[in-house]
Length: 222
Image (cartoon, rainbow, N blue to C red; front, side, top):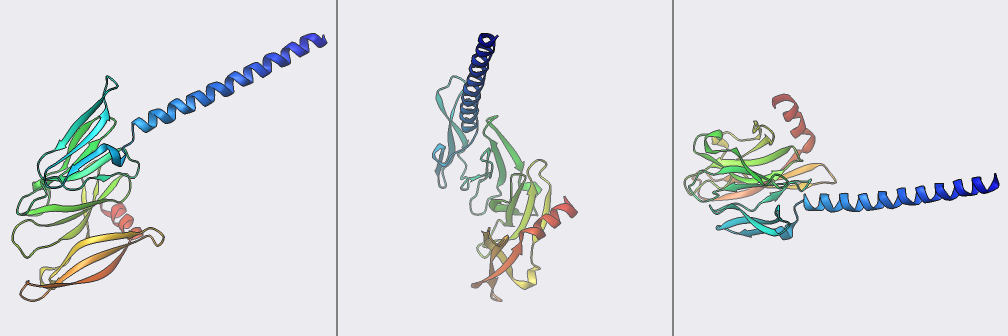
């Protein structure tokens, strides 16, 4: 009887050991799989005002280069979960651009928003990820020499729906030109160009935009 119990104990130890080994192996394989589905900076080849491409592992397990745009693309933005790239093309003076998403796992390029989706003679100028589901888009007038920025929009990436976050009446002579996120405070700092009456020169003023306010707009308008 004691011998039987001893053998059962050995079998139990063997089963536990094999289960642990299998778990470690699957975790390693799963992590390796996830790594293949995520975008790293080293995979991206961005040539300013020329082209944007990404190096990835193809179906034959060999590296391949996917051209994303050769039409004056903007610097690409990697989503927080590192599964997608967002970029504008063309982003060129006096041209109307479109907003594109590249999905790494499917290798698909989607035109999320095209020129006609923005205001009359407007184009996307800069983009930032708010989170994995939304983009912040700086949209402004595409033509002429006096416009340097525009108004800030939020876009739902699953549908392309747009809601305005910050804009100014023309008589105020103000345009947003850039933003910076302060993570510890949950606040975006907006760089705003305030033009003189002739629209020849401007000074930079700063304003705060709370992240909570953005989600309030999303909840109410998208």
